[in-house]
Image (cartoon, rainbow, N blue to C red; front, side, top):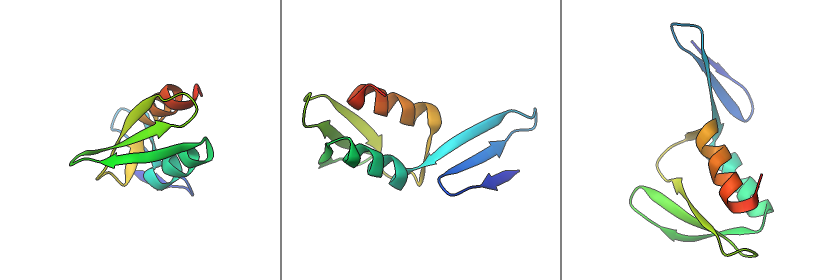
Length: 81
């Protein structure tokens, strides 16, 4: 079963566990608000760089939604969130 909300999608597996996804556009919006910019496009991932710290992270390019764990890791790497 899939449940949609404004910014995330929840998927329920057969064993009743929830998996949450963040819209890629929401992740990119948060990265821009933190002062990050898109440095380059790759075949499968885009490279985002934080202007202040110089750190970078790769964001999946062709996904409409990014798993919450992946999004959290990207935000933590770039902004310490």
